[in-house]
Length: 103
Image 1 (cartoon, rainbow, N blue to C red):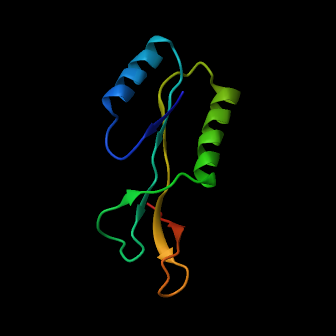
Image 2 (cartoon, rainbow, N blue to C red; image 1 turned 90 degrees about the vertical axis):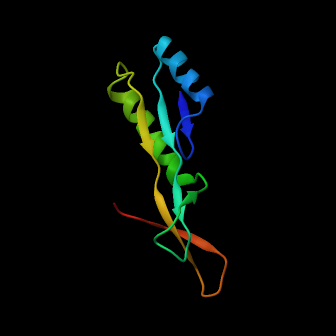
């Protein structure tokens, strides 16, 4: 099962899902939503960002690896998506792209 964890903790329904999945001996891939910083600040609050192709590849890779190597491992696997910083492509533009942050 793929379970998306948005900012913060799991919701009540997601906790119930987790319990039910464990009772049925199913694997959970918990995907923690990617975050981004505003383009004009490396500090301050971050915000949710959209799921993209690179995120899909990260999830797909984790599932494929599990299928090929260790299908008996039913422990929840957490996949934390990237933290990005939005930067304007052109000066005075509202168009942003995402730079990877290391750390």
